[in-house]
Image (tube, rainbow, N blue to C red; front, side, top):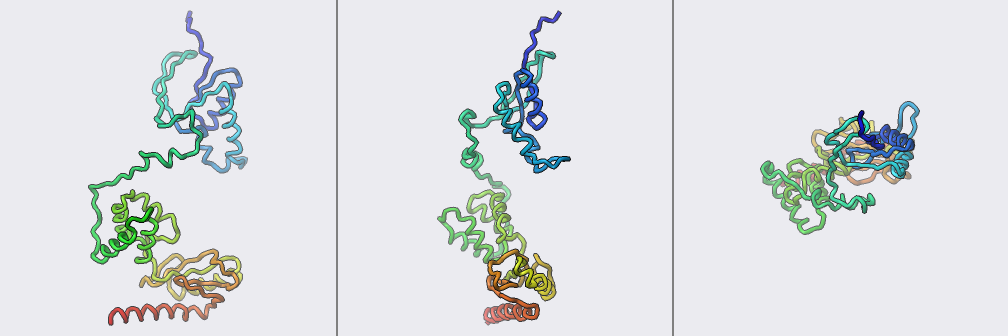
Length: 301
């Protein structure tokens, strides 16, 4: 006869929607429940969903009450950020060894404010691949980037300003220059690219000297903006989102330029043109083409 005493507690592995419901059912039946999850918090995949199939109910609306119940239930102890290392024993009397991942904080005092993440001294140490080296730049590009970095020297948080200066010079952000910026400012390249791809004003692909924006907001749409856009595409030989082969014009469609009383509105390089007609488009483009020709003549002279 086995005299081993049965332990009246249960370990539920996995804190998803199923694990939480199992923990609640067992706890309501009088068992001491340990709810284990390898993630920093319970909730599982359902926490990242918007709707649930087939009822189309809100995922958080279904899950939130169970999260609250698990956190408040006297018979449930939640163990997160841990994994099972070994299981020994027999049914009714198992012994489970867990491995806790380090948090580097006092969990009892944690309020979930997130300040520890923002100020983590380990996470915020930039790491560089010193052996990779930097791409060689042309002499002109080297002088430009040196001048830009020199103007921003000593400025607090200069990255955005440096990217703006490069964008003004080249009308886009060349990858080789971004690598030099990351190296000079001692900022991880991933952070530089993260910022460069976040703002719509920046582009990693070449843009034209002049960016043409056609407003397709409600007022402009009613006044015939889609036909204006079609006419520009025909005149330039490109589609919206593209750049002409001579890198003179880039064409974009936007939703509002803030001057609905002048609809339909088109901007070219920051200049605003109101009440634009299809017949007037060639004259507008010719004005900027002529300006570039004059610049080229002056430079050659």
